[in-house]
Length: 227
Image (cartoon, rainbow, N blue to C red; front, side, top):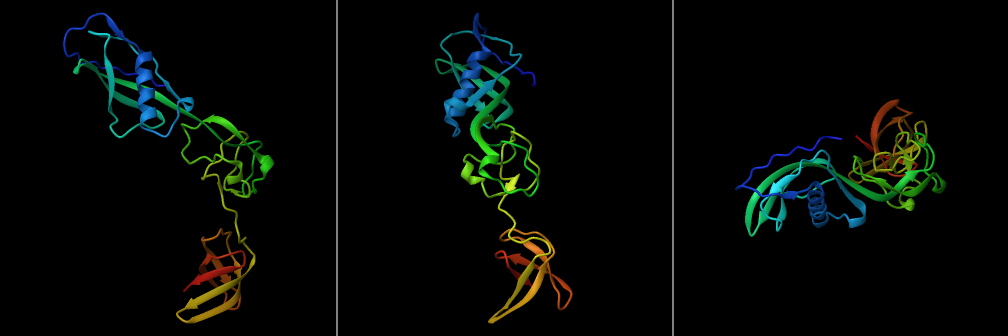
């Protein structure tokens, strides 16, 4: 965990009223609730090595100045204004670790590459999702039937980067190559040279000419060829 950093710029001499890390964390948590879709039961703000700050009044209001465009999960710096009676007493720079916990889909066992996800392969569990670099799934129904795009470890959250729609076409499969030019529509047998999902651009082969072509997967048997 990173150490908290603190710089205070007093506006005038201060008395022995203490601004504690707990109060800073409470203010940041409230700021997060007001500027995100998170709810009170799934957000946590952690601060470390915070040096208490002396203030001149206990009737103070804390206002987050930066970042000005809201708050995100993870480690970040905040500039906080300490105000009393409409006047700014001090500015405090702090670092805080904002953690977000949500109920997401996780693996119940290791899942190998290209495996089709079954209902018994996954479960819902409350997890810290702050470090995820992709969108997690929140319902089992959203992942069942999808295909694993990279090996998934036991208890790993499923995201839109490690599962996707299954391949409709597999390498070596017999296809119909569809050529469309204006009013003309020509179909000819072909072979898939790559796996492909609906909408993927894959390489195919026309056996009669021996040519390698590129086409878009339409369904499990049809590829529209780009000429």
